[in-house]
Structures are given as structure tokens and as C-alpha cells.
Length: 167
Image 1 (cartoon, rainbow, N blue to C red):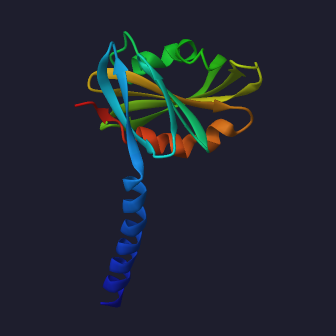
Image 2: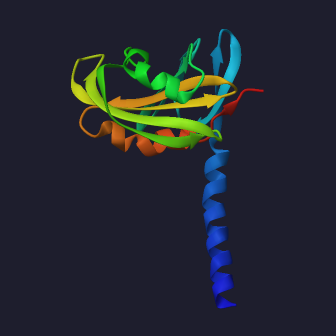
């Protein structure tokens, strides 16, 4: 009985933390060719910049870039094009590792590598996640000098795990 009560208390505690956090999120929609395609939940305080097929989510602990990936049918199709897709933010990207994962109940690819920041040429690292929502492939990317990309991994994944098709 005592074990049951502790489990129940832990569950209530976790729910009390999680529910207010999700209530503070807001939805961001990425449009492709003028049509809503992808919806992400982001922190309420996030600053959003968007244009056709692109959105940037900037918080205190990450700057997440998300693009629609044209002419790709699967996440794996997009992996060889990683350097090309992120070149507006990160150049000379060389893949070091790739792993399979699931985003929006579909196969996704998480690619890590090194290169240079596009704005100032400083050496750094980037992490790119390719995922499929509503039949469209998307790429999410965080990058930075030293270990900035790896420190932004958890907040990036938290946002990408909310990905779903726009209504």
C-alpha cells in the first residue's frame, strides 16, 4: 500500500510540473508554398522568425532552424543533402555521426557534424534532424561554437517531438 501511495504522489507531482509547462507553450506553423504544413509547440517566450518553408525558434538556450526539404520522400533521402540544406546558417558541414530515431511516429535521422558558422566563419558543430510530417520532409538544425549544438540538443528535441501536420 505504501508503495502505491508513493507512486501516486510521484505521478501527481510530475503532472503538476508538466501541465503548467505545456500550458505556457504556443503553436508555430511552418507553411510550404503558402499552405500550412507543420505545427510545433514552442516555449511561449520564444521569438519566431518565419518565411515560406522556414521558421526559426529562438529561446534563451537554443536557436532552432526548421526548413521544408524539397524533393525528398523520406528522412534518409535528405541526409546526403544536409550541408546544402543548412548552408544559410552553417557551412562546410561534414557529417560525423548519424542515428535513427522517431519523430511524429515516423522514422527520422539525427545527424551530427562539424563545420563553420555562416555568419562569421567560426568553427563549430551542428546537429540536424530530418523528419517526415504529412508526407513532407523537414530538417531541424541547431549549431554553434564548441559544445553549443550539443547543449541545445535537449530543447531542440523537445520542440521536434511535438511536430504534427497542420490541420
